[in-house]
Image 1: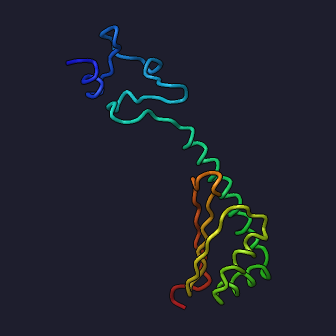
Image 2: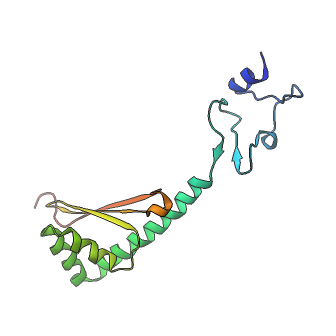
Image 3: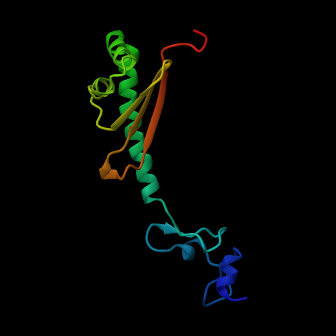
Length: 142
């Protein structure tokens, strides 16, 4: 059994010795890691994009939080958003949502029961993230 087939079997070996590789030896190019429990046919794990996506998602959640707080705290604002949505005026709903200092791309859908908002990161981040929320304005049995 050669070193490559041993690695595929989950027991990575050093090319110069018959000892298993340590975690430090299993590290690939800077910032990437090879799992000792996975076969080599998988790419090395690189958390840079994953971590960046988590940060961008947190930003989207903060922006959505501003919108949700405004709807919760201002009956006038809530009425404007709801009225525009019930009339099917998508542009006005998005304008109202963006008036809360939201920079995310926003898309909305309306149903007789409520409003579905989708916040996504802009093209500069290759649309890495999406945060969605559905708000109801009727109860199911009404």
